[in-house]
Length: 294
Image 1 (cartoon, one colour):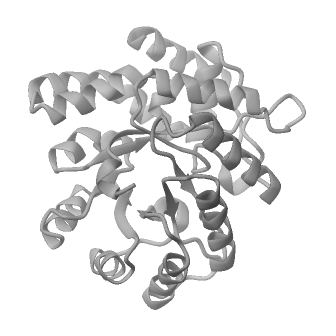
Image 2: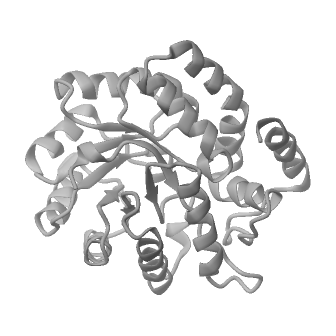
């Protein structure tokens, strides 16, 4: 599958746990069906929302395999494979590819501050041994690494299967620069919820977000309105959902999304420590927003 085929609303899945803290794969299946029925254009497991950093390797593999089986190629699946080491990232990327992933997402993670050359070699090492597309993920808020546009373009131009970029700095100028530097040929995706409208207007191919777990129809309507050039309609749709988008970001993706799913009838368990469940006041606020939107 080419990068051009991945577009629209890319729904980030949760990783549900039962009361004892073990994986709850039936609940994961239920949440995936909710996303697909809600109209998302792709599924992305094991990212920040999916608590991929807090899973054992066996749990990570179980979630990846289950998700790919459940989705069953009805929409593209982009598996987040980031790990502290290049070897670990490559191992996960190969696992995802072997089990049918359409693409993988790679976020450089390191205890030590990485040089640009080290980041470049990380992507090249993974790309050289993988046969499916890679979505380069720039999110300094979680990785501590902010890749410059120069570095991103160097990686894209040198590593053949790094064919798309998820940009999560919250700086719309990054997206403009990626568009200009690639002459409009590099698909880029918005990873910052409050920037969704601006990103689509700037030419973003899609929006990678946890919000469709709670309001899939509204997210998809926003994408369709911008795709069809109906900017007044898009503005109205965006500002209607913006308070919830802000709340999800401020409250932490696993905590707010799991609380929201519980409020709408899907029990996904608590986030894994050190993350905490949304408190009572937060749940009250979230319920009020959901009541207004659903």
